[in-house]
Structures are given as structure tokens and as C-alpha cells.
Image (cartoon, rainbow, N blue to C red):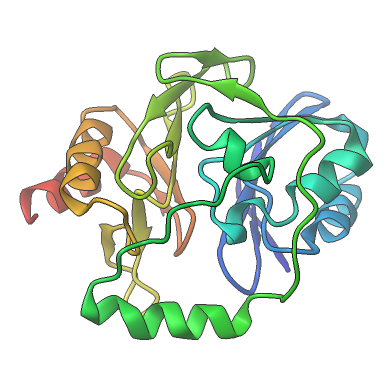
Length: 234
């Protein structure tokens, strides 16, 4: 796993598939997504390398239920004692109570998915012992007040997080950056593409300067303009 500083308060944790983000408020940390199966200990070691402890993480916010975002959540929550948060529609899947609906791949997305599956660790993740639920419009106690934005389309309960005081937007998989040329694109492997595009349009209305994706290099500076250009071309 690579640990990359994006801002003084923000680090990206990059896994073989996908990435998570660590936000710092003084000594209190928030983890946005939790990486792949087996990532819990790796995340804890990365936090130690940054001069903190796993116990400094107050909450793990999961943008949706896919395994490359929640695989390490149960393990890291057990190590850290952090609260796990997800949208109410995602929580039963993350807790292992219900199966998640499979994505509907466009033909051009199938090779991307097949390549990603090759790099995913195998096995069943340990679900978090408990998952607290959030809804669109909630404000979480980090980053000066993190707004929860319900962005269905990739999954029914996908969420984004917007930190207005910092200009930082965590999009989950509603938006991505191409691994080929870094072009910002709508997320792939969606349940409902028209619904995702509608959600993307609502994210474009936010005044984001920094945009952090589940896949691909973040946008540092001018994120809202970039996102509006994506909306205009789709």
C-alpha cells in the first residue's frame, strides 16, 4: 500500500485495487473507506508511520458496500475501536445480513472489472461488529462539518462526503479518474447509470476544490470546474 500526502490534513492510502483516505483534525482521525480484504493491519501500520495510533481514528465512513471499499473495515474497527458509518441502505450488506446487488457492466467495462478482480485478495471479509447509519443531509463531526450527500446510481446507498470549510469532496465511486490518462469520468460498474449521472450533476453544484475518488488520481485544485465539464459531456 502507498501512503500519499495530498494536503497537510489529508492522506491517500492506495491499495492494489482502489484507495481510502485519512483525514486529520488535530489528534482525531477519520478514515473514508477501508480498502480491500486484509487491509486493516496495513492501515494501522500506515497510521503509526504518520505519528498516530489506530486508536486515534474516531470513525470509518464507508461510501458503499463493494469489497474494495469495505474489505478492511471489520478488521480495522476491531483494532481501533472506531465507529463504522454507512448509508442505511448499505448497512445490512456491510453487516453481512443481505447480499449486495451485482453491478451492471457496460461491454467496455468488462475488461476493467476482470483485471481488477485478478488483483483483489480472495476470501471473505469479517463484517464490522456494528454499523451506524447515516442519511443524505447529515453532518459528521470532522473536517469542520462533513456533509453526507446521498448519491445513488453506483449502488442504491452510495454516499459522498463534502467538507465545505476545506473544499474537499470524497466521491466514492460516483466519479473516477481513468487509469490510462487521468481523465475524470463517471464511475463504472453501476446499478443505474442514468441515476448515477443525476447524482454526479448534484456533486457538480458543490464548490469543491479537491476531489478524491475511489479509483484514480485525485484532483487537487479546481475540482468543481472539472466536474462540471464531465456533466456537460454526458
